[in-house]
Image (cartoon, rainbow, N blue to C red; front, side, top):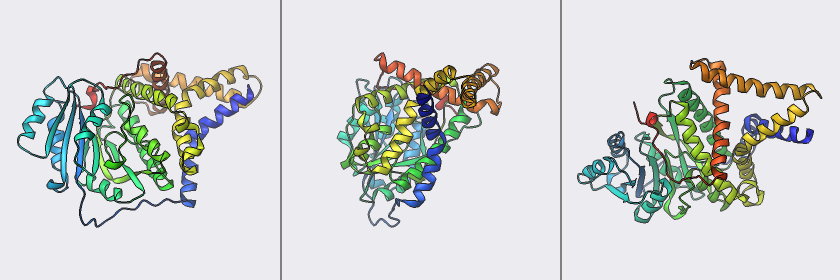
Length: 387
């Protein structure tokens, strides 16, 4: 039982603390530089593909944002991949398409989810580079150029932009989500310099068309592209200067629902492709360390905490460390419950609450996976479309 206790404790500490220190140290010893061509003579043709499902609230803003990008108009097309939208989204896009030849509407008649819509858009895209965005993600005018510059490098197949949440002051949930993404972006920057990313964010990324991988619609580009490309010894990197803005969910219900769906799909991919998460021979060794630390270990967190708590209960009177771990878990749960009941912005309760929400979402996602209740499509979170 002590062995289980210390293994679980070490892996939790590795993911939440030690890996951060490791990244900082190793990237200084083994820096893998990210090259970008500051003076591209001829920009490549780009297909910017936007996933749409019932986005009438934000679609005009997204079209306007896409058209405002600082990129030659004869070198870009905008493909709005509408996943069986039943509101006014298609009509709005069609109106703009009739006025601008760069805008194309792809109607996916049978709903199959974002990746299915992307796979369909891939078939008709003319770009050498495929860029992807969500309908509620607004790009800085220079974002696309910044992505393309880095993709000029032969050893880089895919790039991920810098997502910033704009509504972090609206609620405790949006504040926590914004803080989480600040830390994730810092980790993305460090992992890129070390070797390669372990995940994208869905709001802003791009890939060379020749490197595009048609994956099952149940999964997501966010996780699959970096890992599958990494197994081919191809890099995915973070481009800090390619900035995009988005609203996070402002309620616990929205965030649990979104994360539950996300983690259910992740566990499905993990159990279908275990070697991508545990086999060190699939990757560059430094990249395997990142994958195991940032991905495999993360998705094991709820089960590691469960093992750690149970073992601490059974070992409660056999040493101070077991008592510390036991009461830390109790405190985490109590703080989370107090925060939920109080409905007030008290920061001392905020981290335990968000961390507990994160673990609970993983448990629920795993529960959906083992019941076979994973779906490929998404439901729009209303609080991410307001403002």
